[in-house]
Amino acid sequence: MERRKHERHDLSVPVKFDWELSDSTHRQGTGVTRDFSAGGLFVMTDDPPPVGTTVRFEVDLEISRLGPAVTVRAKGKINRIEMTELAGRVGGFAVSTRRMKLEKA
View (cartoon, rainbow, N blue to C red):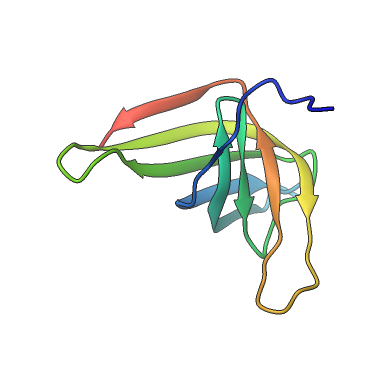
């Protein structure tokens, strides 16, 4: 039974994210989105933040070759990490958010 509130869309674009550890150490990471919805996204990366961590993320979307790009900025909470044992494949994390900010580049 599907429990998601928002429809997911396959989307593979670069994403930047950052978070703070419990000892106040600031960390940054990059990855590629696997899917995207109004309520969050899944980021493929080999350095996921811990579950429960609040992250800020930024995704640059190119609407069309003729129009301006749009940047999505948001803060969300890591609710799941997926690891993989396959050589050459990365795992990643799911982040849920209540609000995303869209900005024209």
